[in-house]
Image (cartoon, rainbow, N blue to C red; front, side, top):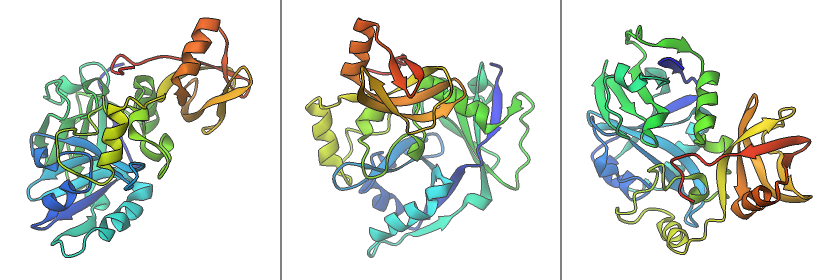
Length: 295
C-alpha cells in the first residue's frame, strides 16, 4: 500500500485548558500526562473505579492546552464524566472538534513522508497543530491534528477514505474504542493496552489503577482481541463466536473479509490443536496473533 492519508471524520477533539489541567488529568487517566508535549503524543484511557473501560483517546499538547482525540459520538459523555471530577480545579473543557481535523497517514513510507522517525508517540508541530507517530504502534503510521483553517500540502500521499484506514487498523489488531470495547465492562489488558502503550505502569495513582495493576501482576488475562479472517458471509459486529457448540467469544469490528474478535485464548489453542472451526454464525474465523502482541 502506498503512503496514504485519510480524514477521520468520526473523531472529536476535547480541549482542556487552565492552570490545573495537567494535575487534573494526571490523577484520572492511565497515561502519564507529564510526558505529553509538542514532541510527544500519548495514548490512554479513563476507567471506572473498578478498572473497567470507559473511554480511550490520544492525548496531545500544543501550547498550554491539552487535547483528547476521541470518538466524536461519545465526546459529550467524556466531557460530562470529566466534569464529575472537576470540583475546584481551575480547568476549562471545550469541544474543539470544529477547530481541527484529524488525519491518519499509513502505508509504505508514510512516516518518512511525515518527516517522523518510527518511534511511538514521536511528534512535531505542523501548521499550528501536530503530526505524530501513532503512540500505540509505529507500524500503524502517523496521525495529524490540523487546524481547520490550514491548507496542508499532502501531495506526497494518496488520498483515500476512512474505510481504507479501518481495514488497515483491523489487520494490525488495533481496537477502535467502543466499536471493540464495551464501556463499563471491558478490561484494558484483554485488548492489548499494555503492549500498545495505553497504560503507564510507572506513574502514580489514577482511577481504576489498583484493579488494573492487580490484573497484570496476577496474570489474569484469559481473553484477547485478535484479528480474524472471515471465510463466508460477513457477520454483523457483536455476533457470538462458537467452538464445538459453546460460546468462546464475540466478533467486534468487521470490514469486508476481515474483523476483530475477542476470544478465549484456551479456545483458540484448542481449535488449533483439534483443527476445529471457530464460527460466527455460518462463517468460519481464522485468528492470527499480531507480531506486537505478547501471549
